[in-house]
Image 1 (cartoon, one colour):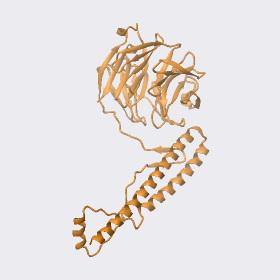
Image 2 (image 1 turned 90 degrees about the horizontal axis):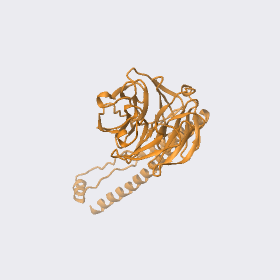
Image 3 (image 1 turned 30 degrees about the vertical axis):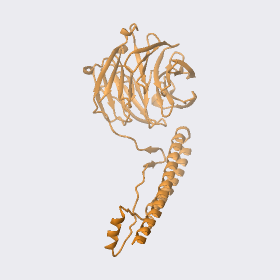
Image 4 (image 1 turned 45 degrees about the vertical axis):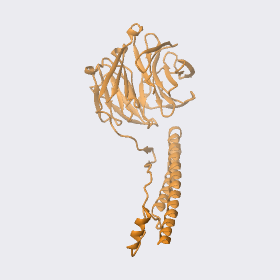
Length: 392
């Protein structure tokens, strides 16, 4: 009997080793597929459609081969699933067994759910909507009481530490607030800025419309460390994937700037060309961009290749002046003339007013939402206040 138990344990150990080896192999294949997916995302941004198409076909073939290989592992006929809970239990079990059958057992492996098509790569994302979430006012920060005479803050950005940096247009300066809402620094800048975006916790970027440049700032020193010439009137700016930024221009559409300050791509979308008006914008983790045009009361969304996704207009949203992501690929937009903040779904088909004058919203301009901190900042009362809301 002891010999039989030892034999069972030997089989168990052997099969366990096989299974661990197979799991390791599958994980290697999974990482390889994810790497191919990331490569394709970069190819689709910077290469022609025919090149992208050929790359997709090659990756599809690789994916099918890997899928078949994983399938063979899972359905291997001699796969054994044994569990030894205790010697006494095994003894009692074996004494009453006339026939022992070992059935194949399938092991569950992580599924990366990659779907490939000739025109695009689609990756599953979190589709949860927070349109029903409630926001609570934490504080109204009265800028004038902090020594800034007749302030007009037009845009702001939030860092993971909770610090907020806002553009004060009338006096051509940047205002840095601590996480508790205290004005920490008031820094003059060389030219009028229209947009600001945090790149990471140490760097941020602003658009200097008069000089037609983007300035990369060091947050600690609050000084420019890099200047990028746009050669077009630039307004809105947002972080775009990794550490890149996208800039909205009056005549030339959108310009993608790399983390080293290089102009990597110009997105020539006809809906965004020669508008001769300021563009406010934001983007999500899919590389989709949302642009708002205050004069037309319109929101336009394009994909990572510059193709039009949707155009949004609604009577409840007039004079849009600010836009930010909600952390789930949807957006929040401020309505200057309608005194409200609206939530709009990723496809532009659904919308809902989440804040209005009853919640202290009055002529809002730039807004910013930080999904980790669940913090919404609003350049409120035509820029004389900075209002901070928390999502419940």
